[in-house]
Amino acid sequence: MTNTFKLGYHSHSTRIYNTEIEKKEQEFLETFFFGQIICPNKTLTNAKITEHYLEIIKKVDCVFVSEIDGYVGKGSFGECAMALQENIPVYVIKKNGAEMKIEQVTELIQISDDNLWEYGYLKSKKVSIKKLSFIN
Image 1 (cartoon, one colour):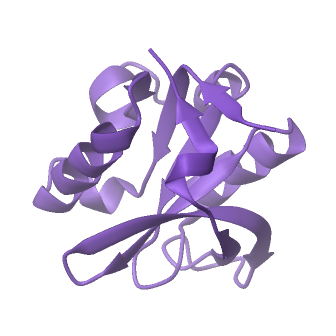
Image 2 (tube, rainbow, N blue to C red; image 1 turned 180 degrees about the vertical axis):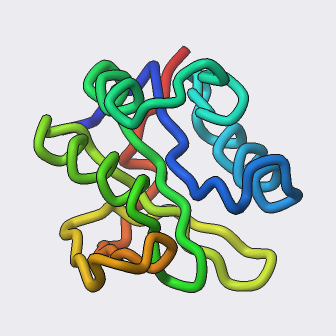
């Protein structure tokens, strides 16, 4: 079955807000996702409470999440958990130097209660972009 998505959400750490990393990830996502991508740093500037972000997650077609050194922070972890609970597909942006690719998240692993930046990691599987039909 082919998925069609119109509205995506870019979940990422506040540590990369307004950085070159955030900009490059957004550009990467825009190269194959032709719907609207909500970037909380740019689109949701008034949403300061986590619950607001989680309500928005329930309304999107898919979530793209950014890792930092193989980990996701507590906020992104919670957003991914909400998406998966709502049967919304989650895709992780895998980085190897300047190269980026997308993999589908299959499982969330929490490794810390205290470390907000390295709160958990994601298990994922390779996915062919051709199998994902992103539409306007």
